[in-house]
Amino acid sequence: MNINNEIAKLDWKREPYGLYEPIEYTLAAGGKRVRPQLAMIASRMFDGKDEAVMPAALALEVFHNFTLLHDDVMDKADMRRGRPTVHVKWNENTAILSGDQMLIEAYKLLSGVPADKLPKVLQLFNQMATEICEGQQYDVDFESQEQVALDDYLLMIRLKTSVLLANALQIGAYIAGADEQAQDALYQFGIAVGLGFQIQDDILDVWGDPQTFGKAVGGDISCNKKTFVYLTALQLATTLNHSTQPLNHWYSQVLEDNTEKIAAVKAIFEQLGVREACEAVVAQYTQSALEILDTLPQNTATEQLRQLANKLHTRKD
Image (cartoon, rainbow, N blue to C red; front, side, top):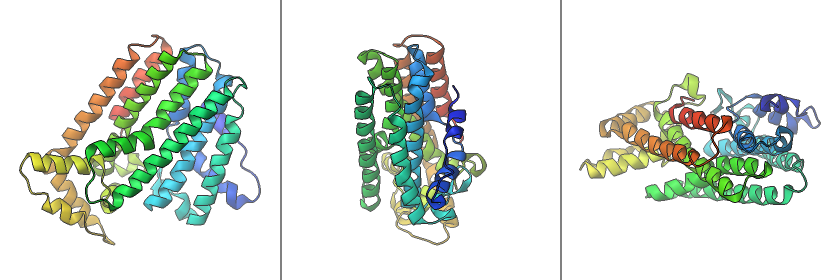
């Protein structure tokens, strides 16, 4: 079964169109479909049936896109996957309400999981959803905190990003009948890949190509977001006995035109060697993920996860 074909079968031609059309618009934008792919690959690793795991795979993708609708509102993001975000194309109220409905639709899809597996899957899904909200709150809190420790940032992205990947893998493996040790290994693989994925996202926000990245480059700088790149810059400046004053100056500015600010901050990052330092951390997480795979059954699915880990490490979008 193909995840894109199954997503295309979902019927959003319903009334009121103002509620469902933005959902169709969001899911039709594509994306890498990483989360549902992970659930299906993990299931196949243990000879699971696609039709058994597909409801969970679809639920994970719809849930993920729901979080993006609300995240874009909170971040005031204009672009997503190379297209206007829902709150820009329609309005904030629409993005919030359609996002709420996507959450409900995710649980409807999840109810299609085999009955004997559903209680545990619901438990895992609910825990994941709670942790994502906790991670989002930390992200919001960090905006008003003067100082954020790198370890606190890593906790935030673990909750906000990694647990969704990790749970997709665990849920897929559980539905296929994998034992707890294998489920835990896949969960830890997902955590490592997710941390690397988000740090790579932070890197791309500064140095990515807008044509392939799908979002405006420099958005995090414009919003004074305390990303892994920014926090690494502060750490390196201290280590190298450089003044942090120029960086602090720019990150205290709220401007209508951020062109000069983005260029100036990027120049500071490059002077400190921030990109190389961050890419080294992504490589470390990727290596950790690959080592976990060595403990699992070696088959076609394992190789797919290995390729995915390497691809996320070097991704440009």
